[in-house]
Amino acid sequence: MAMSPDPVRGNTISVSTGQSPALPGNGLAVASMLTWAAGFPAAEVLLQTWPPVALFVARLALAVAVMVPIWFLIDGPQRVLRARWRHALLVGGVLGSGMFLIILAQKLTDPVTVAIIASCAPLFATLIELATGMRRLRWNFAVGVLVSIIGGLIATSAVAPAQLGLGAVCAIVSTGLFCWASMATARDFPELSQTGRSTITFAGGLVMALILFGAAAQMGMDVMPTAAIDAQQVGMLVIYALVAMGLSQVFFIASVGKLGVALASFHINIAPFYVMLIMLVLGDEWNWTRALGAGIVAVAVVLAQERRSPKAA
Image (tube, rainbow, N blue to C red; front, side, top):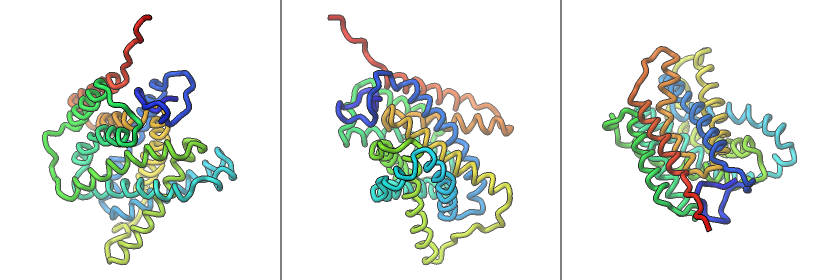
């Protein structure tokens, strides 16, 4: 399957099957963003009593503990043991750094500020694909990137973020690291299943998390929750680790394999709309501005994938 609607020949992530990857690729991206959106309300609850570094470690540890046995069943012990573990430490370290920075950014600012900055993910991802030679930039894709960012800003109902400073810097760096690590995860472990690709990089991320946890403890920082862990927090952690990270990343990496990281990242800008849908179920009100932003991003996805019909001979 083609890496993207207009990839550079010879640099695709997946093997072509002759079928268009657009429909399944976009479906996987939608599933990824729906599950990812569930993490924002959960993180808000957890960050009230959990230091970012503690939440970072707990999230990855739970995901790895659950996903590794599933990976063994899917790929088999031999493929797991022979996987590119050294490279996974690099990719997972980058991914883990991005995850930690996004948690820190939400702690230092607020979910809206983080969502505003994350709306620039298509730009980051496109620049990465151009730099690595994996995409030729076409006018329709360039316009799609711009329209997607506009839709993302509208979906967050943002005129200006409430707080910037260090939190905004963390969110910007996190977005770039996540885009690169997602591309590398889909590209560099072709022998593994989608679950295996996500799990091996989560394992690398967990190593990074433990290093940061140890460093924070040595510096005398708070590294443990400030309140007793109750059933609500356990439930929120399960959602945050297994649904919003584990399941979401499996879907996203599968989507990147079909569409490329740039086009898959367009869907990140619909996440505020999905958060609104989740909150709607919990009793919040419908927000037409976010619905409009989501619609604009959907148009951007279609525009970026548009192909001209070949001219008749």
